[in-house]
Length: 124
Image (cartoon, rainbow, N blue to C red):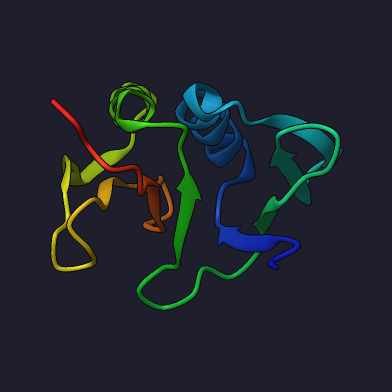
């Protein structure tokens, strides 16, 4: 079981503004904050995503957050783009992972790849 993941950004204020808006549809909020250094986000009571001011890794990082369903994946994508993210893959089935994998990808202001995904079987 993963306890937490860290993403490094070059502008913490811009990243905070982006992540707060982009992850709201997934129930994420800022739970802990170290002024000028890091924010800890997640679904209360414990943060599982740390956004840290520091050297951005070459090529960025990839973080996928499980969504409660396809509507939440779509809402994440829309919110992330409205928050200034750059589309890196619109909401859709990614059958090369498995037949029911549904995800959307957005680059944050530092170039990290943020994904929301769900694995529920889709029934029309």
